[in-house]
Amino acid sequence: MSNTASASTGTEPLTLITGSGRGLGRALVAAALARGRRVVGLARSGAGALVETVELDLADAGAIAAVPGRLPAGPVDLVIHNAGVRGPVNGLDGVTPEAFGEVMSVNVLAPLLLTRALLPRLAPGATVVFISSRAGSCAEGADPDRDDLYGMSKAALNRGMVKLSQHHPQRFLALHPGWLRTDMGGGEADLDPAEAAEGLMEQIDDSGLPSGWFGDYAGAKVGW
Ligand SMILES: NC(=O)c1ccc[n+]([C@@H]2O[C@H](COP(=O)([O-])OP(=O)(O)OC[C@H]3O[C@@H](n4cnc5c(N)ncnc54)[C@H](OP(=O)(O)O)[C@@H]3O)[C@@H](O)[C@H]2O)c1
Image (tube, rainbow, N blue to C red; front, side, top):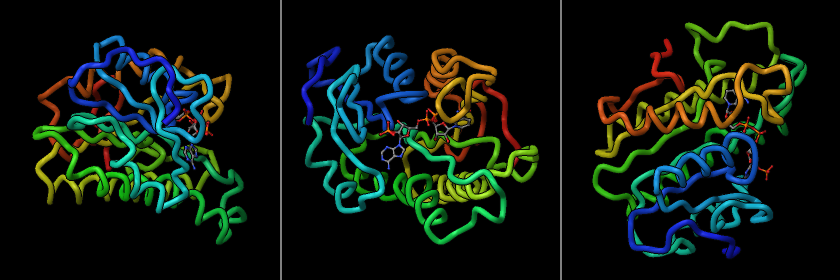
């Protein structure tokens, strides 16, 4: 673990956030810290991190399995699977074995493997959030973008989230963060990541949202 500043050092439950070094993940770290949460980031590098960081490449299944043993002591009551890749943006031409492997590995397989590894550490009543996308919605995801693999990966992630909600007692949510001014979303996007992170934290804090929910940062349900 790289030892960067931690906002709190008590024995309160941990909040884990993947992709915590930049973009939405970094904004989620700040929003969680502002709520007094004890946050541990999971990122490929601890450089510039706002919190203590466990270094993790989500393409490495062995490293994912080792995460629980590298965390500080204490139960985990919130996991936010935020890290993701967009992959090719040229439609069917971009569907190569390599691109499929990377997009599905980081966006789908890694959050599922990490969830499984963390199950013994999850507090009763823990919430596990998958940062999804409206692009993964067959009902609402029609847009001109040709990020076909990305949309497929978020649809698969959503299905995995529902499966988890059916078979495990924790609360599982898939949340669309909006179109964000990040490296992935680009400068023309609608939302500052801090605004999205604030909305997402409000959704997470809303105990009325049931396990298996697919909604957006502002509380609206997203069609499957
Ligand atoms: N931006 C949007 O408009 C938008 C819209 C809908 C949904 N989303 C979703 O929101 C989430 C965050 O997106 P963003 O806009 O913040 O994206 P971003 O700016 O491109 O950041 C991506 C994050 O994922 C991490 N990551 C990628 N591959 C990784 C790997 N193999 N191992 C560990 N970390 C890895 C990156 O870490 P490094 O710094 O190490 O590369 C970075 O922290 C994603 O799940 C995305 O699909 C975004």
